[in-house]
Amino acid sequence: MKKNPAGGVTFCHLWVYRKVLLKRHDLFNKILKTGICRDVHVPAEPEPGLHNFAEPAFRFYGNSNSLPLMINPMAGIYIHIPFCHTKCNYCNFFSVVSSKFIAPVYKAILEEIAITHEYLNGRQVQSVYFGGGTPSLLPPAYVRNILDAIARYHSLDHTSEITLEANPDDLTPENLKAWIDGGINRISLGIQSFEPADLAYLDRRHDRASALKSLNLLAHAPLNSWTVDLIFNIPGQSTEMLEKNLQICIEAGVPHISCYALTVEEKTLLHQQIRKKNKPSPQEDAFREHFSLVIRKLTEHGYLHYETSNFALPGHTAVHNSGYWFQQPYLGLGPSAHSYNGVSRRWNPAGIQKYLAGISAQKPWEEEELLTPEIRFNEFIMTRIRTNRGIALDETEKMAGPEQRIALLERASRWLASGHLRLECNHLILTLEGMYLSDLISTSLFVETA
Ligand code: SF4
Image (cartoon, rainbow, N blue to C red; front, top):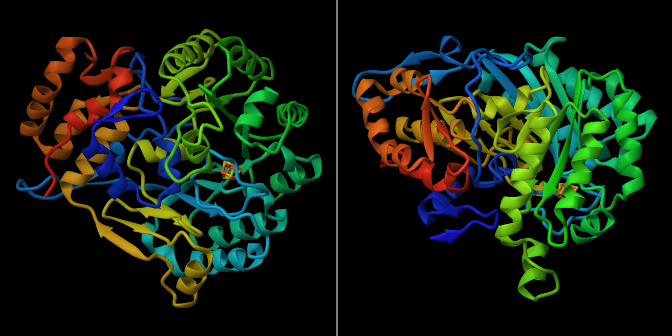
């Protein structure tokens, strides 16, 4: 067994499965960062702003010998901007600290939009997400031109959620206005902490003053929504410091908060620093204390804990990220980006030169994998268990037949008996205790893959 630095316990084969499934997929790494979930109620209705991904949105194809395909008529587009001012020590997302290739990569992304648009089969695009890296490093005109190009090849309209990740340093009133004028209607702000000691531990460039200034700017901006990233379980971070971080966000009226436990990924600078004893390591005890504080504090202030690491005020659940948790197809553009259309996955190379060469050859992806019904089923389990709706048994049955519904319940029975899972309205949902073992639990619910 492998100890998950976030505090959960992870079987090696899940780790391997994830590596196969998520290799070089920066965005999924972001989404599946922590191994925890919590005790929540199944909402009777989907959140406003969140497309109802449940059964009526899917069409099922296949025969009785296999698990059928789930096809969602909506889609998302992710654009990876692989440039950063400096590299944060804990980061394992693909990015380079050089502005030399910003213009060539921008032009390549415009080409990639034309090359790959058929991958989504004409689905309505309900979300676009500029992630990275640091998308706020892009000149605003590039952002606008990329959105214009997407609109030429895909059905995108004013109801689509269009998010840009920004660092506090780049968030000036001028940039913000230009992004909004260019079509951005949601900003994701990478604050992580307001505490100077935390920011120093993480090698973040911004300081408390610029973080507070950017909060104030966003609170008064004409955006549909905005979100803040926070990190907890940073060595040296007390519960008081964490509570202050949360309080600042609550008082600023931040409509959506993503809270991640610090994880130490191999091949990061932080991993080396800890190995050489230059920095202390995150502690499991603090992790449990911090995470329960985050849940209590945010839910007390009206935030819905709708996914392991995500909290939203009513009407502000993230449309784009919800797409990943509900198997919505998406097209990934840019170096290291990853695409999924319900039938296959594709990976772009995590290297600027390789990516540019792929665009020149009219084939930006370096690998494509056809998804077996079993892989799709396991992905469904792995992502749904992280949501407050849990695993819907009716949906499982529609996907895989009544035998799989029964088999899944049998596999879940020991967790139901031990109190790590509960069954509510035909949904399997992790309890508070189950959240610490969510990787182990989801692995035990998988079907065998070839
Ligand atoms: S700014 Fe974001 S993407 Fe860039 S190094 Fe830091 S954490 Fe990674």
